[in-house]
Image 1 (cartoon, rainbow, N blue to C red):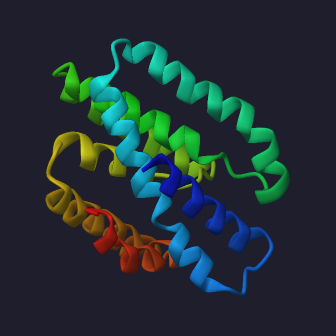
Image 2 (image 1 turned 90 degrees about the vertical axis):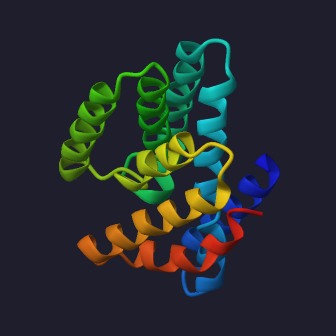
Length: 171
């Protein structure tokens, strides 16, 4: 699953940077984020040390920001969204839903000031898998709702092109 996520991510980045006119690469690439979000949710659930796991995600965010910034611009990279989703999933696993909601609200406010790759959608995807473990179809429906809502509220082309790949998420 990690390999599929990486290959689809590479297709997305190649489409974004080198072939922006080839929308098929971007559509295939939209599959990578739900896969990575699933892997983070499973990682939070199964790890022996959630703090170390989250530190690794934040470390990946810090070290990948420079190359990402050089190719994409001022936007913060996706590892921040994944790490925040992982933190929210950790709060849920520790039966602290108020903390998870507070974190998501704070992140929402942050993303309104500073663009972040996958912004509010990233943590929502991680949580969709965390709250519905072992239920891929229910998770996919929840993810479709997240993308559709984001697309309707923001007019995001990015969310609209994600919808066609969602039927493949349960696979």
